[in-house]
Length: 288
Image (cartoon, rainbow, N blue to C red; front, side, top):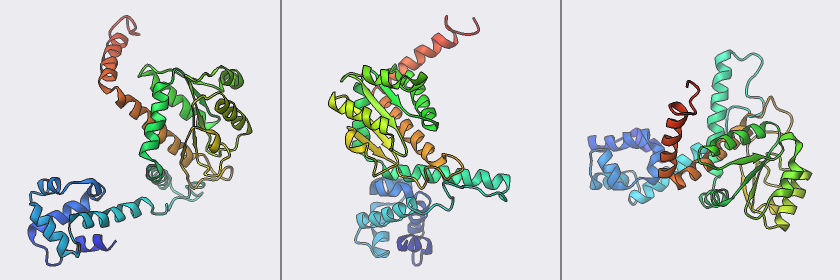
């Protein structure tokens, strides 16, 4: 945090250097990926002013300064949550205290999840989903609500997913998968014996599989083609509700959907416009 202290202290800073320092403090999460030319433009200063400021603060140049800022951003993402993921409120908490705690828990969960995501892995998982003829979603309880939300979004890009455990037909659905399909498992605990048998079957048949779990020690991981692990400070049973785990699942699935959408962004937007006209003003309109 030393770099942040120096930026706030601003001892012996010129007016232009103060302007750069203030911008960095207010936009600290953007600095690790910003170019010096862009920072100069945004602060109405110059390349030499920024280099001079970096050296005045004890850094060799802009790169070492950015590395120090990256450390601050990383530590902020890893700050321990003051909100208990299992009991995020107490009996004596006021209504707005509960609301603030849930908001803080939600934001903290997304930050932690983002920090655990790997770019190459996300791209690989998205590619499996993109190439699959059918997407079978395996999930139970609250996680199935997240799966249904994902299923609903996929319809917007003409991809149709199947909730495999709807009507207790998971065994039939599992037996119908082919190598052209894929199976996506949502299991925070990652301890389902039935899922283990299914994943073994899919592995034997060379059927692509994706596992999203919160258990780094899950015995399902070796059987899945790709695994996204999102660890949260949430117990299996002793908790008020599945807050953190479900926020994390929703965030990951929303991210995957967005990556899929972006793959064919222009055609998806055109399709959206066409379908909206048909549904709102065309023969499919409810008001006709």
